Length: 113
Image 1 (tube, rainbow, N blue to C red):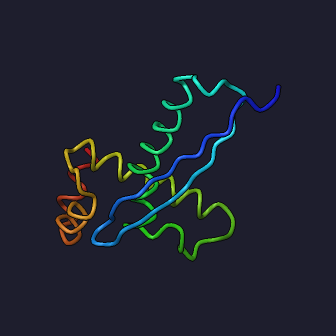
Image 2 (tube, one colour):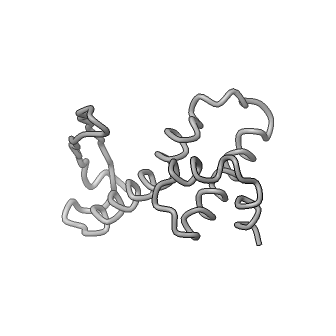
Image 3 (cartoon, rainbow, N blue to C red):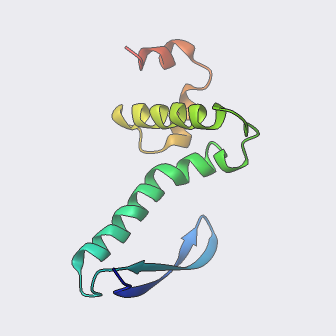
């Protein structure tokens, strides 16, 4: 199984008011015409943008001080569960959901029933 293609994806835009540019490279054994490659890259970034970005930015997961034992995996699992729960209850903005719920334990617990 050899390398069928190398793909370079350039992205640019703004996040908040800050411009950004990034370049990603992908290698595959498939031919460069394969629609599955494009779909796979899009799917990866859809997941990255909808889950990991929120966990990194809102929960600051990448700078979390819990670095030993099972704590990082357990906290990540819990954060994913909370994000899924909030989205299932119609929240598009996780930051807004946290602000709305942060001082109302009764409201928070109502999501778990």
